[in-house]
Image (cartoon, rainbow over all chains, first blue to last red):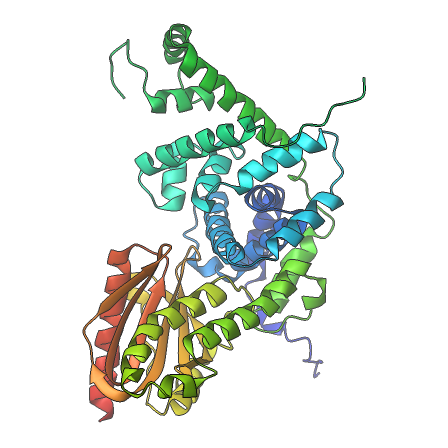
Length: 184
Length: 277
């Protein structure tokens, strides 16, 4: 019997069990990837965009995965995508608009002023320093893991971490943000 | 890290903040911090930072009802069609638009859309052309390397079509370099204006998503140069002119790696040249 062929996906059938497992594994990683994506960019839509780019890349490159530590591999891909995006956005002025949209869309419990100050401070970090800080502080990777994921010496991991922390502390200390007096 | 009980290194302090120390080390570091109040203050800031950062992003580590769609979307979407384009956030669309604009602007700056301005200079044209090649290559890299969906017009799955098509537009028989020995595979290519004429760009990518571009453009004054290097903000370009064609290899990778890529491209272009003539 001749089936409709306009689905276009018929060829996926043969290796379904294996690819399904792979996809389930990727799916399980999505929450962590979503958090890491958001920690690298300036707004929620940007984070979802980066997440989608990353998932796409992970699925399309599955043949290149060496079969160990899918999580670290996906995080490496995300790191590189984030860096490309950072470099691109730093050259194009629509960033300011994005940032505004993002902050407007968010509605969180923590003090929005503090929150936006921290985000602004983060946005001042280079993409490399920011990735290292996020991988260590938020994702809990050990220094050696980060070195392997980013293909850099561990000494570079340490100096990037150090720079990120110092720069962040410096930016948070800055009082050139007008402080609002709370009614009491 | 040293065994000296009295020395606490910068690395030790980070490891302390990040919880990568044994209880004994922790004790030693805490003792040291007591007598080093300035560093102790710094460590307190780092600890507070870590808490704030985790709080800032913790809420994002959730799954979403659309996550599964993310998977199937990706699968059906590749490599070129994108039926869900409308669902992309503003950034995606803006990026695609900005990519076109930026390239146009880059072209305008280097004289792509006003060749007469350059020609008016007469004798300076060849210098102008050679200088603008790396700049055009960098613009193309910056614009397209960050594109996920629209990085190339024709994907690697249609490699022979790509070579024929771009070779025809470039009026120069073309073989696409194979960089797999260096860990880079072909993503695809696109037609691009270079020096005001049809040029070709190939994009490569390694297993972790690092990208390189190889740009070819006509160079009608038919001379040769050795390899030259041009670097802007960490984006490195190796370029050379060989007869009627100028070549530029661009990437944000260590210079030594890019040089290997350039050598490999040169070797392969040279070989196909020899075969063709």
